[in-house]
Length: 492
Image (cartoon, rainbow, N blue to C red):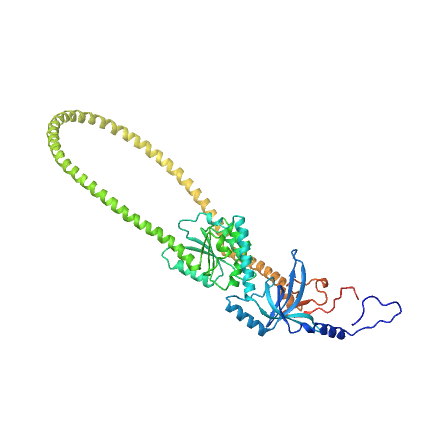
């Protein structure tokens, strides 16, 4: 025994042990456990990969409080072997904060660094099981709330040609979708909402893209990804994204590259397809079907109207024949009647013309006298009006000329150039202020930024107690360090 419990009686000398003796005794007590392997289930925290992988394995209770925690290290050679085994199982090894893992470990103890675990192996089936359980829990929750078919009940336009595409810009999924639509003879308008489709930033990025698409004048939103391993696709089995799609005001289709499983987003989307290309082909297919129906309708319309036109043409020909024969008889009859009426009219016209000629002669003489008087009056009035109109127009022209000269002075090149020069000076001043506020300027003057393991900026010594690992960023890079002691201003 290193020592007995309890306090020493007053006056009795105490025995002090060297720290190395204590660590040696601890190592001696743990010796039977060294070399033995056992499986541990835990959650990764404080993950860091520097060739080797370092993390803390933690266990939380129902209130998310940590009830157990141990450091764990996986050496680079073991890490490469584990990744190869996961790849054979169709999985990617996701060693990120919050990931639940089943890991085979050995106990290690170092006199300086204390007790830790060395990771030897990981169980792909455990990782796959966790993903599947999470997917099923989400689907079960959404099903109970009646959200799985809500988006499917939204009406899709017969010819949706304004498409919002949510995917990674420049990815194979994006190119395949756009090329398939572009190769069709129909006009599509595509709005790309770039988003990260895997990793811890996927949820925030996809939700932001959906928010942006809601403000666009589109008929349909397509979420596309070009496939991947089960762990990569598991980032899309997200409850928040699924709820956003279920309550989305626009129809949402998914084209996520998996051949067997149905993801959470596929379950809540209006329609789901196996690949982005399949979504594009379905859209083109709607246009092809409508085009085919229009072509068939045009053929039927031409056939019906051809028959109707033939029947109408035959009726018209019969009517024309009857009309020609009846018209000929009627014309002959009317010609005889008109000839007799013309003779009677001619005699009466001769009588009336003699009387009208005499009356017109009298009226003409009277009109000539009156016209000469009216012409003289009109000439006098026209001369007076011409003089008045000339003076008014000259005054109006002078006013217009003065306004044109004033506008030419207002928009002269000299005044415009002066305005541009003032705006350039204002922009130069703003640029100087931005440069002064740039953190890199402060770093170049010798200042530095210090962050803890979570990436939060260290502003006080209270945030970095002894033992804390911090990262310090200077102008040309960064370095890690461990806090040994802290001193507050005024402590001496």
